[in-house]
Length: 633
Picture 1: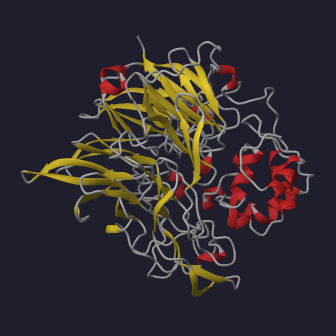
Picture 2: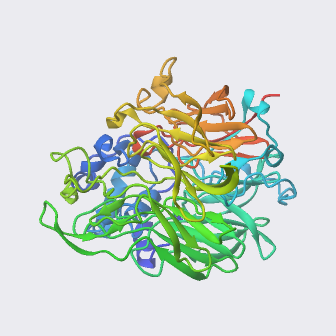
Picture 3: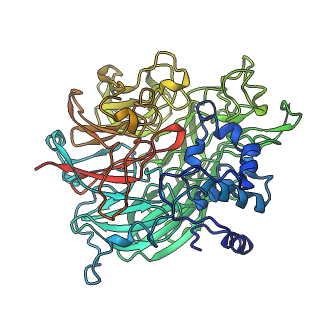
């Protein structure tokens, strides 16, 4: 049996004898209710996963479409649901997995999504001689998300009429959001546990590397003169892969030396001889005794071999905090302040900037919902700006007293907000003229609906604006883009969460003054069959994915699968492309279709927009395609 996770030998032997397999079609059928795993699901999982609207957990339908490996990774050590499943025996975990995947129909082919696309044996030399279109998720280490026409081969006028160049399907996926990287004719694509060098000119794969399951955006750079791909698999395993050959250069864990470890959601940043890895541990699952213990951290690795250089933590280790939950169990804290985002490098001041999320148990810390500057050489903090105090939240904090779980008994007192208003995106660095003087500033969006502009040297607020009231999945969810003059604040505000006066759309401000420039208010589009294609079409249509500026055009994706191209200066709509449709894929994946566009899904490379379409989390629309859009000439 093929496994893409690194687990203990005894566990591998146990799993090898089980019935689940990683190769299943995307759309799952009803599981077999006669299997013993059904009882395990109902007793341990159903309270959250059968009520995704209240708990924000993945829906039962989403779980039944995941592969066995994906579920196992989530409930195992270091996984997002480790705390909730920690009391289960291995035999119970296997029974649970076998139940959840029992209704799936196996795909017919062996191997990965890339196998049908392999280039001919005499055409497997990787060409990296062209422009470096897109080498890291932030576009540059300043996290601007602004790509030039010269680097990308795309102009503003090109966005007026786009067509599908090709689509690649991922048979084991429901979420396609791991940002690729493009250098010359080669786009490095990460999907279904396989990294591949895809030639966009010949539309074939030069090499593959089976590093393991990953949602990590890809970073390209040179390390000691070697063209290198960096990305993360599993929880925090950083891989350095030769970009020309697909051979591993090294693999190293970025797990910090103290604490509960954690996961990497964003990509890594390469700067000179250092790799910065942000860790998103939080204890947000809040499972039973000792909720909660995880917290965010930053690990710096040597680019040469992945060896440890330094680490920084958003707080000290959790201890008993004196609180007892409603089940009589002791609680721990502080916890939380996860770092979901890619780091930003401020070379002028030799500092690295990270942004953090909410606390997940009492007491609150000053590092939650914050923008933090660390010394690039030592990891010591230079300054901390906290946008919101006392934001303490975990998955038990839902609804009101009658619906909240046992580990949120403190949630309703007057001192704690519990809004879950993370910074989900990086802080972008730029220079603008303020009062006649050039000023370096950081610009960041928050789930509260705020956009913040801070002085880069000292971290104090120059101006801020708020659009709407924010929501746990709304406000500015996955970050902003800037073009040097303007900041583009995308707002999600899904109306299904009881949002007060939802304002999903795109809002633009002058970075120097904070004055509004233009705005676009999103509306649902459920006619002509779209209501059948898009999950909760009348509720989930906001802009959640990180936007991107290409030349003078703003590219932004919606939860109902649309790709908008706006004129960045005026807000005029240049084009709208619907990806929530079925696609004929060049790798022959049948039944491939697009869905919600979310998180790290909007990218560019070699004259094409590259859009990951499909994001089944949070009751959104599943999909399994990477779509390339090109000018229709």
